[in-house]
Figure 1 (cartoon, helix red, strand yellow):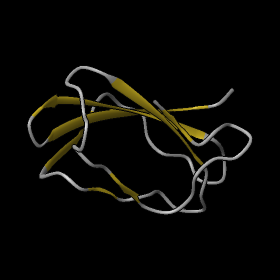
Figure 2 (figure 1 turned 180 degrees about the vertical axis):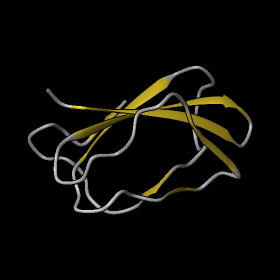
Figure 3 (figure 1 turned 90 degrees about the horizontal axis):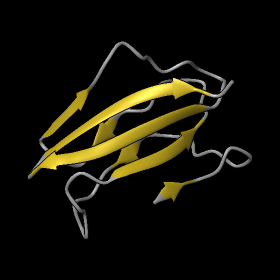
Figure 4 (figure 1 turned 30 degrees about the vertical axis):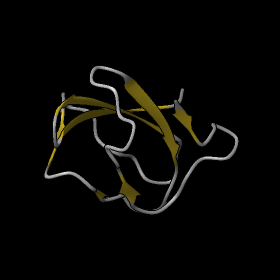
Length: 79
């Protein structure tokens, strides 16, 4: 599933939910804010790689459930 769009990105903090989650499926989130969002909702949320959130531009956050209560995510910027 894709959350928000490049023309209408989300803002604010992000709460993840395991309801109907499928292991190994990557979710895509468009986000743009003046500060980096806090990710919460499961006990183990891990950033992967060296990508960081850049404020005031469109960030694309990819999140993947890898096991119960663990979400791994990585961030890129549009363009």
